[in-house]
Image (cartoon, rainbow, N blue to C red; front, side, top):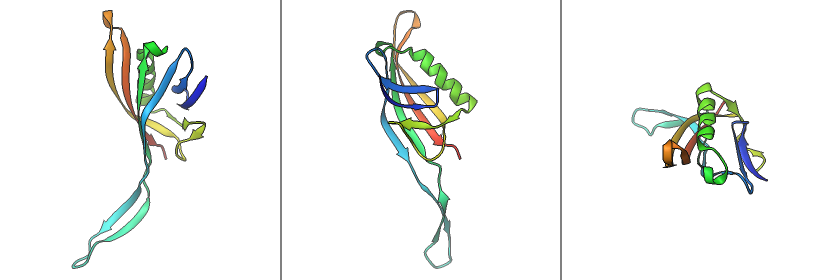
Length: 132
């Protein structure tokens, strides 16, 4: 099994012959915090106040055809989001960022629903923020 990464025990990103959960469009944001001080008849002065919390946005496709149950994955992530679960995000065995991350939001697109409402394929947009 090729393990791609994980966010605690809530979601394991991996690829093998029976099961596949991966992500795409991984975007990480790192920024600084700046204050702008207005000065009469002069250009404003900028003051660096420290680092801003970093964030990660990724898209995850969960499909029954790849050996996972989309509703189960969605429910697990929703529960973690609503309970305020905080854990390290790993990709390739390395931590993303210096601190733990929390799941700020989940956006779901139900791509394919079969007979009797069985969810077969869904695309999830996950937004993680650094917990400091």
